[in-house]
Image 1 (cartoon, each protein chain N blue to C red):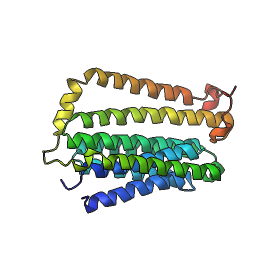
Image 2: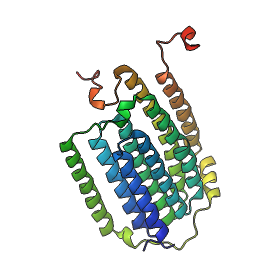
Image 3: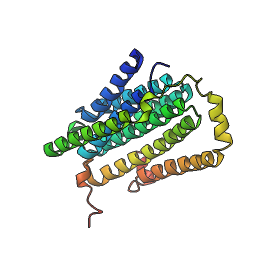
Image 4: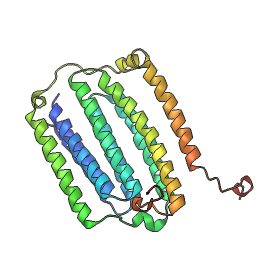
Length: 101
Length: 170
């Protein structure tokens, strides 16, 4: 196998950095969801890469679980976006203030 | 060293991840996100995990990206094209990103995993099935219940209570 573990890990770190940048900078709810997806995918890439190089089937099994749970998370996140958009007519998270004390 | 396929996939994945966050239009952004998720599926193929790669394609590129596209379509037109961010915060965010990348990258390059390579055969996907029905079966059942309850919860959340049944027909 030509590729080494460190290559996949570095790609995963780059994706994690981009995702954290998106979470920190963007105030658009949908863009923040994109950033969360990118971070989850970086984690999945790490799981499968380490599972390949050990080698152990646990990595792929955990990655499958993680993908399924991420799908559920996105469904709830998108429905929250729809509810918030209906209440505020906006997707800027700085406008969602009704929980502010 | 990495081969050509790996480098191409890395460029596609990271480039479209940046494009997903930085493109002006949310619609093009979600299409770029699809490209990034597809690139991850390519990485899974390179790692000899075709089952996970197909699962990724079916779940992420097939359903989640389409779900995001439909949600974007429900939002007002001017909000799709409006960028909401401050300049100062953006520079701080870029600094944070570079800090994370450089420090984590240095830690990992410095650590022992740099020399890890493998000549062993890849994991057979039958082993994953065996894992699911033997050691992980309670987790599998729990995951099914969680999926069902979250999808039901999402439907209940997104339901409009202000519209009566008679109005729905119109």
